[in-house]
Length: 127
Image 1 (cartoon, rainbow, N blue to C red):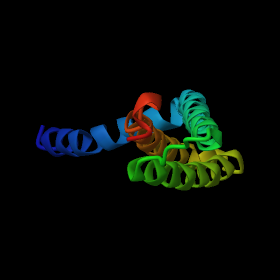
Image 2: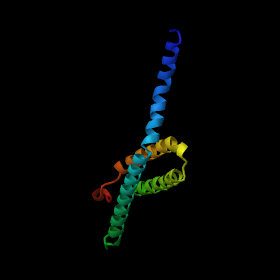
Image 3: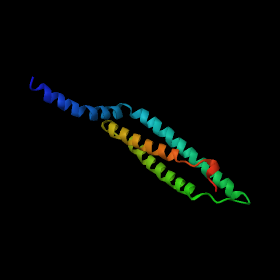
Image 4: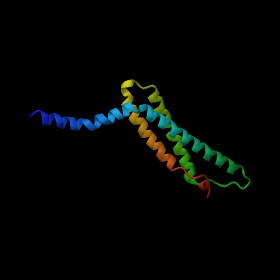
């Protein structure tokens, strides 16, 4: 009986981290699919805004875009570059690193979602 309590305490301490590890390990493919979808959405939004900027600058009375739009485009370019590095790392990853890769992919996906949510509206690009 005296061994049961310490064993249960150790199991409780290890339970949450092990469950988290297994979640990332098992759901890596789902995380990668979501990662690619968000990355494609972000790239698409960036291309739309760049196209809108190009169209406006070609008009005779071209408007100058807001500084926030230029900053957002720079941030997107950096995030997409980092996402490419993560994708390469995950593609070349070993089976035992699945949990680490799953966590990395999930964190980068959350970062890309945040950047995508901060995207300027097409109507608010110009002052």
